[in-house]
Amino acid sequence: MAPALDNPGLRRGLLYWDGQVIDDARLVISVVRTAAGLGAHLLRDFRATSITASSVDALDTRTGERLDIRARTVINAAGVWAADFDTSLSVVPSRGSHLVVRAERLGNPHAAHTVAVPGHFGRFVFVLPQPGGLVYIGLTDEEDRAADGHHPAVPAHDIDFLLGTVNRVLGVPLQRCDVVGSFAGLRPLVRSAQPGETDPTADISRNHLVRDVHGEAITVVGGKLTTYRRMAQDAVDAAAARLGRSTPSRTKRLPLIGAAPRATLANIGAPARLVAKYGSEAPAVHQLAGTHRLLAEPLFIGTQITGAELLFAIRAEAATSLEDLLERRTRLSLVPEDAARARGRAAEILALAAATPFATGTTK
Image (cartoon, rainbow, N blue to C red; front, side, top):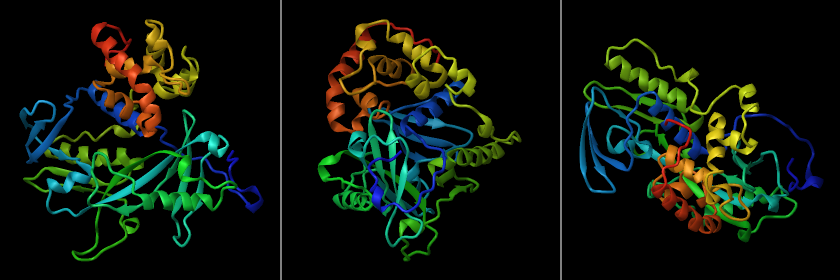
């Protein structure tokens, strides 16, 4: 399961099964498209500049156009930027850094494993196998108020910390040259300490906060990816109460687009890899592969991602640029070398999509 472990040093083991988000970008896109299917109106590439309880001033980052949005109620779900619109909050950005290595370097593991951080009870570094022959190693937990919220950098000491922790249990230690990519995210933690006090970000609560004050926008902040539906439920229920609605949020049992029972997915006429990635929409992606030579082939030798997946991202998932395709749909950008190899083919498919009215087999 984890061939790279230092087997002579093992004394005992514990095997457990748990949920794992394979691709957080695909989760976000699925949530957005599910909302659109239920009637939501979506605006992309806009930056909110100010909000009130019933309005949002926004700027189109592509054209510079300003937009004044009016609503019966507004929810501030701006993450690490939430305090920009609610000065009563103290939001601490906590940087979570990850390293990317080739799976073959760790013996192609097919199970995740954890490594305890010395001197920190309850803290672990995770080694997570991913589709496409990669492994993620993470993560850190450091306050970073100066980080770029869109592209937070991974500092050298985070790389040293992650490699040093993991190498304690590997038969052949990883070297810097084994790291083919890195990425970081920022958790918007709500500080509970009094002004002037400082807590390590690992000690700040991961619970989310819904702040509902009459005359102000509702704010939801904090929490974790694993509790995103409960956060949505609490925020939507607060908004519904302002609107005088008694029907509670139904997110708890609401399937995302592409979801289906296991038995249904097992009988879908598409490759298993596509079914795992797209669920019931896999046949639409698979069908595209037969419409043009660019779509049937992998983007480069060493990846299974095909041109059909990029075209589907353009036609059904609102991708409009190379960055959309390589960073926010396929995650190829996590390994810069792979992104560079895919860039030319991705540009061809963008041009092809603009010139040819392909059908995606989906209405959303």
